Length: 326
Ligand code: NAL
Image (cartoon, rainbow, N blue to C red; front, side, top):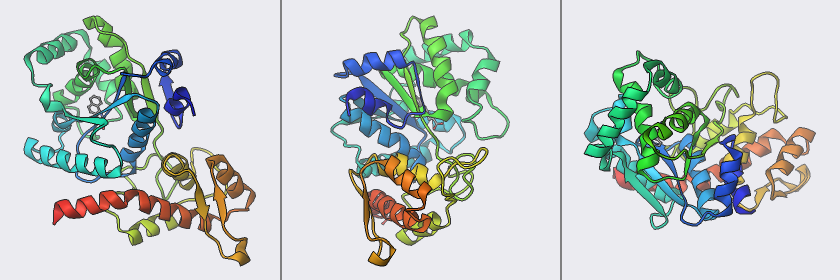
């Protein structure tokens, strides 16, 4: 794959394609980031954007991981001390997952977001932005309860970070798109450049195929799951024999293969006894999808294979968590 194809793999949306093509044409020294509100345990939602960072590294970009401690504080995730501690744990799990410390830069938000210049720029943005606009940007991020003043400051800081971390590409789940659109509108108001954004899909809830899989609602797989728990979750997942079931439903088993397994392994082997057709190996996601649709691959075999590859992916992070906690 060339740089453009690597950048675009499994992206749900880029804004704009032309800007991303320009970046792909000359990736050396260009910086891309993902920001995460620290949480003690990584789940597949975090790993989906981490996979994108690995693609971007392979495409020749520098990647920056923002451990957004101040943002988590603004979003009511605990005391600052608790958040700092979970940020440390998160960083250790990302490194265990494969984001190399020598090639990925880890930055705590609090390292620069409390500086005088940043704070004054933030107040300028506060003056420039209507409450309504900032609240809309946060609609998919804020955790449901009554909006606080902190919730409208949050997207403005995310906007400024793109400038202060000297980034050339902002990456996030599709739930971040309104913040990135706000950033594209507002950065020029401060005399800063507009940057392209890349949004990854969000995997549907495992058991229903509806909405999104996250730790807050529904079932997700995390670095905390034992092999048995992981197998149990995957085995009870919704897996109709098509990638596009009726209505708003998705096939989460196929989504996990597409977004989590195929990007990290060059060959996937489904192990089957000879009487059930013997082993099948896949180098491309599309071939596996086609076999599930045609009935050549049984959902139970797809699930067993998915569970074992996911288990391999989370094993280093699981071990790291055990170390941290012992
Ligand atoms: C992502 C988050 C928080 C702050 C950021 C700052 C700059 C770039 C990205 C950032 C976390 C994200 C979430 N808003 O909902 O997890």
